[in-house]
Length: 441
Ligand code: SF4
Ligand code: SF4
Image 1 (cartoon, rainbow, N blue to C red):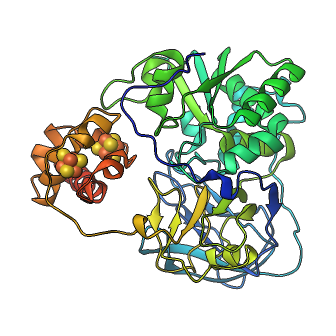
Image 2: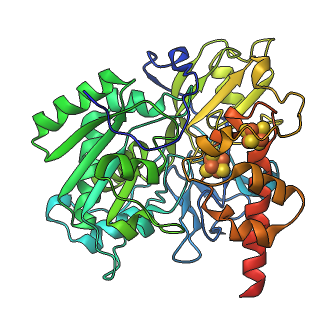
């Protein structure tokens, strides 16, 4: 059978076997959590609590401060110790609410309809917004905004993203095996909000057991969804690549999936929708793959948002002596960490603990113009040229060459024989171009 896919892309080694067979374990409740007031794209939250306040699990502690924003909730029952600036996985300090846990969970649940099937779209929208759900595949875009259909851009297709194309990561794989029915119910709720009938589930063909499990549960539940096995290629799970592979539509340059009538959502995100709408639980925990050759016991753990990374590592037996890198996210798009006090956030899909010296930054050589980065780029950009322009601070030129279309997949870096930190320069360039655009408006 010819498997669907997109053009360009790369085939990195997988390394998924460290944790792919490990059932999801619930991480013990942390003694303290650090809940960032910004865990989403958009405006940060405003704190609703102050030092010494008592809080319950699920209580809103930060309110959304605009349409493109998302509330945050306490992930434990305890007392607010501090509201201040703490280290974040992006390498700088941001405002967080530090809570000390006191005992077991005393839940504060969301207001929700008795039966989502007979609820109105407005009621469902309200629960999804108040649950603080954001894209859990890494993008962290507020889900209530994504599910808002504009009259001029009707949506006819929903795609559930079960690709998990990053090497090492296995949390979505395990969720599809262990929580299939809950995921499918969440998908059905999202499709009701969007009022779409066509639903596809895209899964890379290296997760045959998940394809089979989802097919069985789709059939058992009588869902009109189609499970689509996809070619194993990186970045198959990027929205634009997934849409091209499954429905053969091309999202225009600078556009969004909604421009071609499609909404894509991650496995974890629709699971969070189900938990909010059916069980009244806000987004206070997520499944994280803790993996790699430099962690004692690789696991998939369900951890509370705000749990310090060091607690999660300790729960997996700690780091091995050979560790050279701890990456938050996958090795292709994630960020190396230098401080293990940083918290798990809503978008943390994995922690990769690596002792492979080949993945540590090596000596950088001049560009040999081999063109490998160009033929790897799924967005048809010129990574070599864009990286050079950013390095030399020619931001307007890089804007003209489409730097903002870079999806930061890292395929160009993966193939570069000269070890040029292309992606780092592209991130700098994108930041500067966006800054220039903001100043001009
Ligand atoms: S230029 Fe951007 S989109 Fe293209 S391969 Fe590099 S990181 Fe990916
Ligand atoms: S892959 Fe590296 S060496 Fe080859 S053209 Fe691109 S930047 Fe230059």
